[in-house]
Image 1 (cartoon, rainbow, N blue to C red):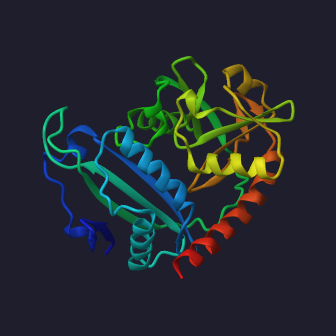
Image 2 (tube, rainbow, N blue to C red; image 1 turned 30 degrees about the vertical axis):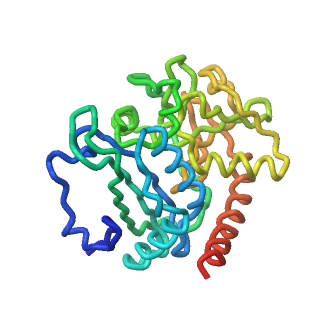
Length: 289
């Protein structure tokens, strides 16, 4: 039976329940982080902690003083150990305490953390067919709130439904201006005329953790990367498109609107990402011990 972390303690998941008036249940009033576990270590936890704190401040939560980075390191590791996870994912969810309607009666935080094992191990390139589509039913808003992972995920839910219906492996999500925001569960990178391009977070996409890591790796290793808006024409002109998320890593797109694509840049970046993954594991272990 799975173990979860809530109310500052580990409990059996079967013993957890949510009341009918819980604000996460009634209003989607909360935010979350999904973290890759590699060799029993939560990867890029400092980045996740930073984004979580930014989101909680933005959405007017009162963050407990004891919620330090060290607090999350300790309890994430305890949760991973309790569930015997070597490779997997860990989810941190914070919802608002109290009742009320749209106006809450409390600004306090209700913390829930869960973890599960996955078959995927270290980051690697999967060369199986990966067909990309375009989702146009809903769009992302050009505002700061779009950069965070919230419990109100209707756009991504609808994009995932469309992806399954149309038998795509991933679909592009557009912003209000018809440009690329991100994808249903990923950020998007493209290569046009040998130039690597990624949309800025101001284009309405989630400020993805792996996106952050890859942008820094490009800068460190002097790889030309332009952070700029990406249009639908740019997508059609691209010789390479790959999508990224912190759980699956870099996923090259093999086909977009009938055009076959290469994966040259994705392969190069994945080598750097594998090295970074190992460095992160070693760094956090040093932090712990």
